[in-house]
Image (cartoon, rainbow, N blue to C red; front, side, top):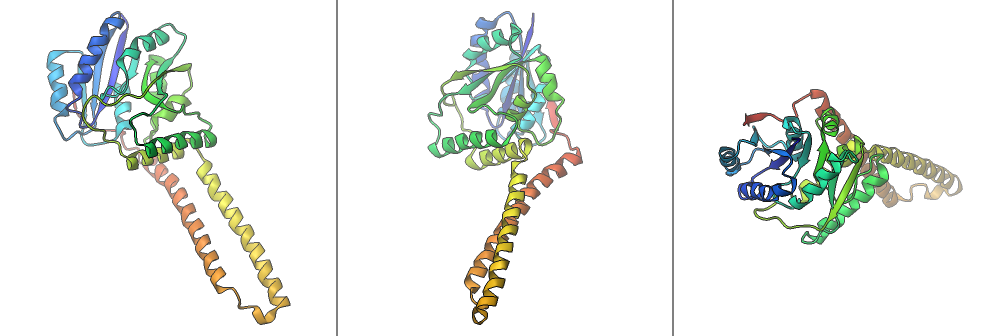
Amino acid sequence: MSKLSIIVPVFNEEETVAIFYDAIELERKNFAEYDIEYWYIDDGSTDGTVAAVEALIARDENVHLVSFSRNFGKEAGLYAGLEHATGDYVAVMDVDLQDPPELLPEMLAGVSSGEWDAVGARRTTRAGEPKIRSWFSSLFYKIINMVSDTHVVEGARDFRVMTRQMVDAILSMQEYNRFSKGIFSWVGFKQKYLEYENKDRVAGTTSWNFWSLFRYSIDGFVNFSKAPLLLVSVLGTIAFVMALIGAVIVFVRALVHPENSVFGWPSTIVIMLALGGVQLLSLGIVGRYISSIYLEVKKRPIYIARKVK
């Protein structure tokens, strides 16, 4: 029998651990021809998440746990899960059941047929989310697909089933700064997406807020686009040209109207502030790229496991 590994990153999800397991087991009848293993990846939870997973391990030998020494982030959790999964096919799912288990049979059929290397899921609606978050999310996808050579599917979830070949390709990308949505697209292979409407969490509260999502989007731009650096060059060129034009205007005016050569201090201050702002913005963008390089060259591990079961 072929084996399916299900990777489930968790962070303070004590309430949903068992609910998720029961929901998958209820769906098992629709893909009973597969052996199955669960890999719960605990991202340094501070509640009873680890105890909840260990209770499942006592019930089912196919349930496994990787518990981090601290919070390393969801991207590290995804990588750890892919690294430990032993299945012929690997699924990535959120524990809150916003990723519908009923899509698994169709996903497995797609990859097992050999027609597709990955079958993912994308939301067609964002019902239940704050409108401002939905607007910024839509804006992010539009901008990153304009400035990046790697196409990121709008509304795509991490929820997908992949072949072992594709998983091995993803694992070969061992960069410290990870943006999985971009990595999934960058490795290529034949991929398709199943559409579904947004679902609410079954229990608990999300650990993602607007600020964490904003930082995640910045990681996406830095990791898969050089456009911000190009923007710095464009701003610098514009500022230089404007300075030359200004210098010519000042010189000509001093020749024509020498009595007014000191005129224009308010406009000078405004220009200086504008140029200072452009310089600080440019330094910030360049600094963000340099910080990514700094973290990469340190060669720190993507995660540290405190416990593996």
